[in-house]
Image (cartoon, rainbow over all chains, first blue to last red; front, side, top):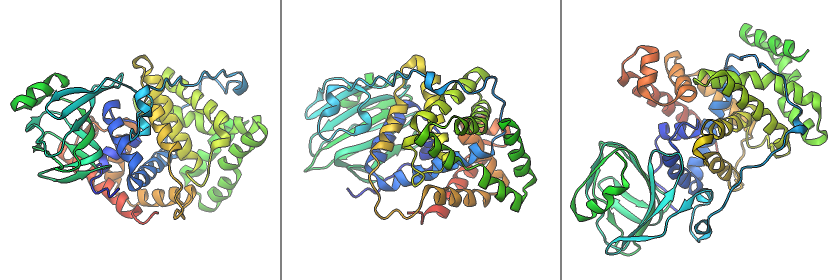
Length: 208
Length: 206
């Protein structure tokens, strides 16, 4: 994987601090899983948190330590969904459920990713070679991690592992790789003004 | 009593006592305490870690706007997790403070977002578990931490404050701008500059 597009410092810092909306965080995590460089930057930003913890003004605890052995750990019940075992599926998606692939046009399909508690909508999109994704503008953000194949738009070519951090200032028309097609995971916030027939199909995905 | 000990650490740190501080740090050695828990379930080591870190985790959460009760719960749970996971702590990957800060982050998410059935803490754990071995990694967690801390001291006080607020209280620029009574654009550019400075200083950390 030759990754060239990475999250901004600020996005990675917000991820490290646990401050991102869960839907956006999941898409960032899919990228980090694939990218050694972003993983290293994440470790540095986590070390910033460690340094801040050392410098913080302590606040006295009301009670002392509990008996650590009395602690009954139920463990986070991770019900792993069937889809999470499919090949090429990022490991970080294991805790989540998925909807079925639904065709939403000719050679375009999408599937819902259920991220409870997220305000962003998360979905996977699979598009056949050469397809032009709908031209659109949005008020929120639209973050994408490419899982397979590639697309290209005004800001460059995005291939497997790349992270595309588009905000309201971006106005793009991605064109899917003419040979490989493209599978990606997307998180969207805000409202989107979509144009064209595919735009109308995608519209229900976007929360206002 | 251990709490008195913790107060002494603070006093010394604030006084910036170089040699004495250095001597004291040798006394409070979280890596050794965590190892003692892992090897022999050492209760005294646990108490010492608790007295040092629980009030800091609580302080961090409260600075971030969490109610005292929630902050207390996260601090308790964080230290219990330190007890349980002591055997998994790898000083080559992260310093004790950094490791404990990430545990606290995950538990804050679990507990604060309990009602939404958030799974985000599992995502962080999977990322951590799946981390591939880095044969060329020459930097230990402690060295990484030292470099990160050194880079942080080179931030201007204004930049430091913005980074601190963003990490602890959130990345909403408007909130930070309100807190510091500076324009929104200034917050954005300061944060961007500070983070790019940190990245520049750490670029060769491989």
